[in-house]
Length: 120
Image (tube, rainbow, N blue to C red):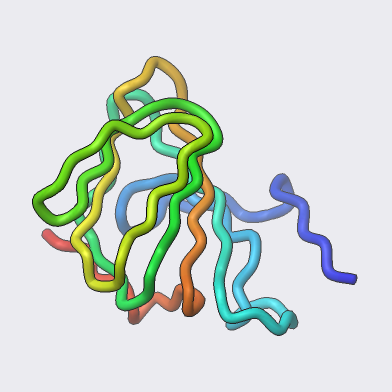
């Protein structure tokens, strides 16, 4: 049985400027899955840097509200919503609420550093 506690996962400032804790990644953990799972946080008033992944990604909003930008589209997002992000889509998310914007990031195939491009 493989169990990982969020509080035991190291908190890092990701390349896109979100605060990230990686929960599951088959490239780092001894598990047989094709996706990765991370817990992300964007502080009030903050926005992630534009970036794109070679993989598809899903954000599942756990807490807060924000604006999701994908290429030329923009939509408001809130707790309880899932957002599908196709591969190679320029994306960013802005926290428009008063509290933290917290969401899960599911990347398939699993996230690798070399598969992400942060746009300057």
